[in-house]
Length: 83
Picture 1 (cartoon, rainbow, N blue to C red):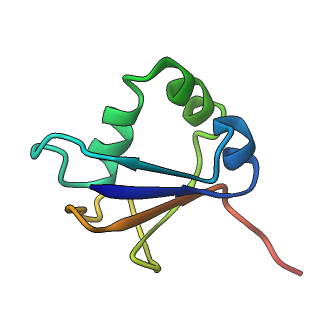
Picture 2: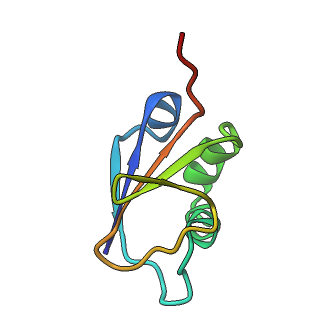
């Protein structure tokens, strides 16, 4: 099981702040996880509306190439700016 947390506009588009999934063993990176999530039409639409996003795996900033495995928590959120 991998827990996915959605933040900001992405959370609103998905309609939930978190989702627990059990992807196949071949899903071993954030990019593959997102690709697998996009097989769900509603999630595909939400993710397509936020094509630029930041990633954290287990509360550590990462990238689409970051590895994921069962038990991980993956956060997806739009880029943020400060000031």
